[in-house]
Length: 284
Image (tube, rainbow, N blue to C red):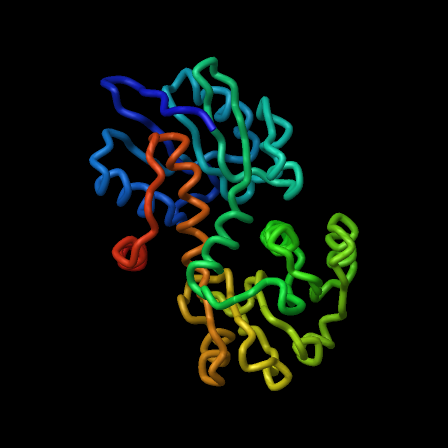
């Protein structure tokens, strides 16, 4: 990470690039921290079309930015534009955080794995990754970051289950020997002996179909988490809570992954608090 770089009048500038970017809740997160810690800085929405990404990133230093977050559809494309990729970005195959050095170089990383595992540990402190297999539903970019986080945490087996099994097989080949693949039709029976279930698909998100899965085979002590946070309690989490399983919603992953970017841009490691959660939820 780099230290904070200041724009005009001593203000530190950062933001989030995407297309579209209106949906991003990152401004609510970083804006809250800036106010809480009394930091003279801004965090802006930066709508950038895909064809304009390279020019937008290359202009960050001249425009006085300390760095940016990236959201869809820029996370993969940015990898060939930046000057330096962290080991995390290389393993995950995507970028979500960029730091501008005092020399104007672009250093990129991915904080999704950190955000996921930190949220899980803080929200479900009794979860022990070494106790049993983890079931990961989905095989996209978020699933890749989560599988890496789980492997690094010591989960003995990560079972990837995706509606298109070929994508699950591609992801499994990029991971270590702990990864296995199962067909979508087996998602319910695969829950037997699981210590963790993670939904990384859009199923259950507002406006999307629910995730259809029978939890009868799931051990009562297994933790269930969903990276979807609109709604905060998805049908999957509601069903798991009803049967007594520990549940972890997806908002915490967003908040914790933002910590590292904020620290690099503004020079302060911020705290994730109930007040921050309430602020972000109220911001819609």
